[in-house]
Length: 340
Image (cartoon, rainbow, N blue to C red):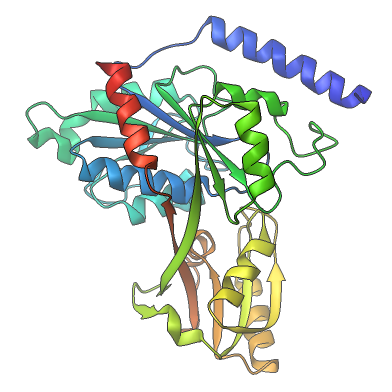
């Protein structure tokens, strides 16, 4: 192990030990959705999918999220389930996206997720759950696999089927937040983005007790900043300019190709990028030069672009994540067993 990796690992293990010793527990079950690597594995659409299924099964889900780059310091509602209360500047892009997609589900931003959960419970009267006599609260912890401060009932870990572990090195020489054998803490493992049978075999050898499934993306529609929707088929065969500020721009480029779009120009920006008026002007000019009828981004980009004046041809692909058969039965079965 390289010296830099050794230093990182030693610091990570010391932090883990300290936080686990002081770990706190909320009075309701907690489902954590996380990953082992830096970068995108689909945590946001996974959190949305789990919350939607929880509602269908009679739970009252509450999303707890760090709100990366959001300026708000203490716990706050991004949405109380009755409407969005905080914008991208204060909440960050992913919490706002979850709030937009999950009408009726409170989304709480708090770097300290235990404090966020307590805040949500103290303000239940402000949420739609106030009308329920005894709501079956379920906390969904967004990006929580390394949030050791809060105990969880079930850990779901997503693994990128296109690039599972990079060069298999720890930060700062690779993408791993923890060694690969940390996956043994997980209850459920989901391979996202692409099937990967060698990865499935490796994960089964590593952790045979974990539930293992695949998770597939689907796109049915495109959304504009004004809320209008067009079918995804509208860009089939069309010249488009694609752009995004996400951790894995290659995956988005492949999504556009899967929709049959002719992506004649593509621009990628840093993850969580804050777009400017100048950026929009440059993208619009490039679209004109390349004869593009559509400018297509991700939903995470669109929530940041809404504050700017956009051409009507700017749309975002609305991505949904579906888990393979048996995943939700496994998840909610484990919740029932562990909570009595």
